[in-house]
Amino acid sequence: MTDSCAICGRTETLTRHHLIPRTRHANKHNKREFDRIVVKATVGICRPCHSQIHAVLTEKELEREYRTVESLRAHPEVAKFAAWIASKPRGFKPQIDTQRK
Image 1 (tube, helix red, strand yellow):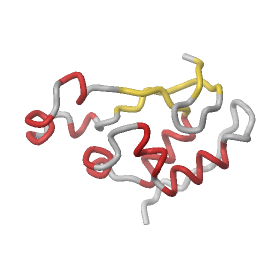
Image 2: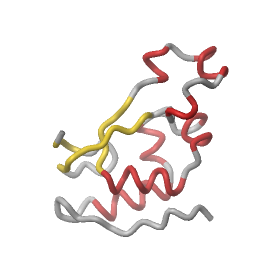
Image 3: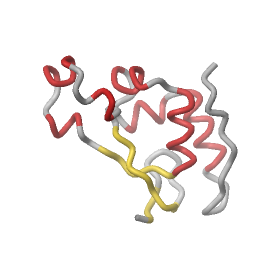
């Protein structure tokens, strides 16, 4: 699927990002607090933004604090990356350090 990335806005081939990570779907907190539709919600984002999100945030952080596109865009490292990659051409593949600090 090719469309605009929800994080950086580039027209790119998109991946599905689960706003609440799949590994956290069975969590009792999620089952108690949210509808199944909310827990399984996805958004289309480009591969570089997807990789950056998972490089800087843990799955628990994604579940608890960054389960909306707006909150993801507001994260300082994600916002900095999105601003940087927004000017890159379609198909650009940056190297992303996946080692959490």
